[in-house]
Amino acid sequence: MDLSIFGYQFMQNAILSAFLGGIACGAIGVFVVLMHMPFIGVCMSHAAFAGALLGLWLGFNPLVGAFALSLIAAAIVGPLADRGELSPETSVGVIFSLMLGLAFLFMGLMPGTKSGALELLWGSILTNTRGDIILLGIVTIAVVSVVFLFYKEIKATIFHRDMALSVGIPATLMVYGILFLTGATITASLRSIGGLLIFSLILNPAAAAYQLTYSMKRMFLLSAGFGVFSGWMGLLMSYLFNVPSGATIVVTSSLIFMLAAIFSPKRKVKGWKTKPVLEAGGE
Amino acid sequence: MNSTVINIEKAVVSYREDVALRGVSLEVHSGEFVGIIGPNGAGKTTLLTIVNGLGKLLSGRVWVLGNYLTGGNGYSLRKKVGYVAQVQNIDPRMPINVREVVMIGRYGLLGLLRRPGKHDWKIVDEMVELVGMSHLARRPIGHLSGGEQQRVAIARCLAQEPEFFLLDEPTASLDWKAQTDILELVKQIHGSRQLTTLFVTHDLSCLPVACNRVVLMKEGLIWGQGSPGKLLTDDNLSQLYDMSILEVKKRRGENILV
Image 1 (tube, rainbow over the protein chains, first blue to last red):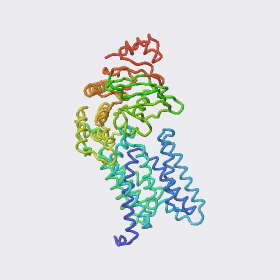
Image 2 (tube, each protein chain N blue to C red):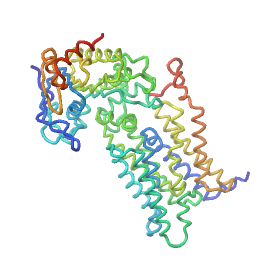
Image 3 (tube, chains in turn green, purple):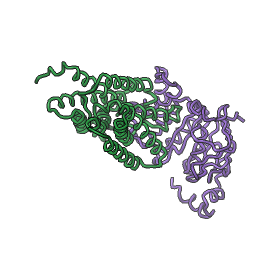
């Protein structure tokens, strides 16, 4: 195998992007999985895709459009689901299809070549620029610092939001802060992974980590680790078989999830009372 | 008489079209054990939420621990109020253990950017011990039974070192043994700490013996209050639940098997 390719600038950029995106998506995924909000995440990622296309069509920075539209989607779906006015399934159905519809509408209205739009659809980590990496770096640092600085508030909010509120933790602020970071992460990873695929890189590593540990701290670490591994393995596959990197990254993360689900010690929950399978972590 | 710690004046709360409280006034003194009973939808839970600042008043005012509740001081108040809700549905795979759940009680007190220290863990372990859950301290919370989870919830409240204790149907959906265990634990805590306690239930048989005073609620109003013996008469219950006195007598007579 000829690995001299890793000496090139574009490959190093891609490796760095996969590393940063894997950490940010992995950490965000823990929120998504434990707070049972995949529906909001799916809506947000498709909204980001639609927003980016709007930017391409009207000639402003696609990432600005992506960020704005994903936050708008969160601002619509979040409170609706929060107040129980719409069931999550219904709101995801409505918003998700609307966003996809808008995306294709903007794509149709766009004059000229559609290659830029298609790139946003399935991502192309190999064309990431220095600017993309700086943006990803900033978002990843923000996500990691928030998790680190507000770990105890986040833990309480994830565990039970009403209970967190009742002990005097600003849980609502935490939830909306998390949604904001989700939007930022989706936006920053959009170019590398693509609008249709980004959500699996958020969901799969965290869902895999969820199968493997009873400690929230370890779940964050495992999830970020799986995210990075998916990115690197996917990149290697993409290079070896000459296929879109977003696709190989997502397929790798799905394989990790399947393995974790098959070998999960949590499947043996029944045996717990008699014989501890895993010791839950703690300080 | 001990000093007043909670004073609710003509509180009105409404959710959309429904009025949950229609002008409720209630005074609670330090160290009291107040049982709040009434049918489903009487406004009992809403009454608790205005005491810890989670409910929004349409009119009236609530004075708690020396301050009138405003939109802004709810957070600092809640740090001093222990709240136990009904048994919650907790995912058995949730990655958080019993000790960590009890520690959450201290998170509000600690405030932002501060991590729990040795002192906090010591309090947590004492409370876990007090509710008899030390042997399960490192188990994931989702693996515990409903009764055990309620014990943990009580330990979490105590770890908060609260000024008072709000219990919202803590025994609902528990089996008889777990119910009586929880009632005994609440009674014991009230007895040893003289912690002001508000205990909400729709189930007459779950009203702890330790209650000094019972408040009857119906359709968003306080319908009567007084000592349990005087208030819980067949006559009052028949009006509270819209049943004939004969029916109440019959049911009260026959439904207690134990």
